[in-house]
Length: 105
Image 1 (spheres, helix red, strand yellow):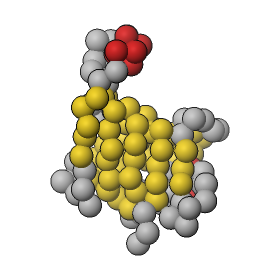
Image 2 (cartoon, helix red, strand yellow; image 1 turned 30 degrees about the vertical axis):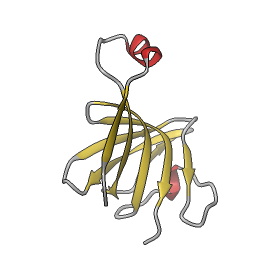
Image 3 (tube, rainbow, N blue to C red; image 1 turned 120 degrees about the vertical axis):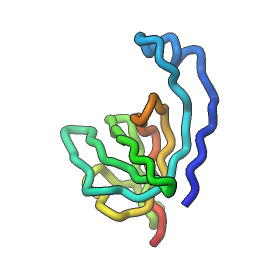
């Protein structure tokens, strides 16, 4: 699986992060390490990229989950060892997901 980061820095995102950190928009792919932890309308899971790097993916009420068959899913559909692609804003090793797409196995 490939992992690539597109360094598109948005002035609005930078102004909104408050701690002076850099926020980038990224596309990451890899395997979910363990079943997602779901709470309310959000949740989180650890994504292990092909390079071995592990990042925390945070799901919000605005995150969209697209299943391999094309339908929409939810946090409870994200299970260990499932290949996914994540699109969202990344700060360090934390991604706030805009879209999580489950890949066919």
